Image (cartoon, rainbow, N blue to C red):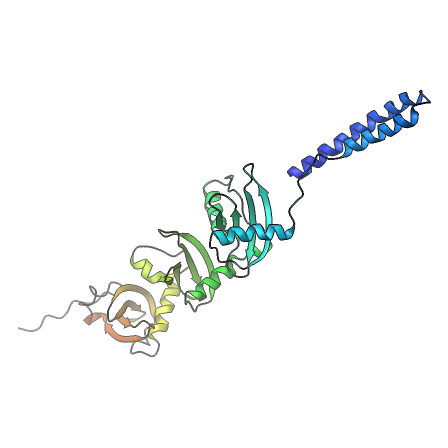
Length: 309
């Protein structure tokens, strides 16, 4: 039950009590014919006075709510072209809590604290999801409820495009934050390798899931088949185009490019060097690639033949 609902019930109860007591007062007064009019008027005045709610502050107008929310956005340097605003409440310390939706990107909860605070709706939802995973009955605090803020996939897709990913985004999530507060997102791509992205002062940083796997990390939304399909597409048009890629491994990069190992179904594996546009620059068969990053790990190659003495 809301506070307003409880207040209304209290006022209604007062009116009912007034209605029960006033007629008896009027009946007693009627016995004094000289004072009946004055007494009845007083009785009506008394009832009307009891029916009047206590002085309540006038609720803020839509324009005042928007101005209050905009003040927090400005004070916190939050990039949001506001499309809707709502006042959620006010604390005993007179700190107002607003929710806003934005033309692009996530919405925010805004608090007029000292200093003011702006909290990303996606971050709030992610935190709540993690808390409920640990305890289904956890108190997750205030959450965004405006319909326009139920837009997680649209936000993930927009961020992926800004970061330069050209895939069709099919999943996304917040996985944490870097020192300094930059939020890190995992982006899942339909049929190909996904990535982790975050926006820094210099722009978007992107780390492919294949590269993350080489460091012992994993992406929830990317499968080995999608990674194999990604490297298969890289090999198209190269000397290794015929490789039916079954397994891949990111090996690292140097000034000459990035290196990937591919296991080929029914054929010898290989290592491919690609440039920054992922175009293949050179292909090394596993049998001759032992000097490249420690050689192939996904393909077993026979030892080199011992020359006849």
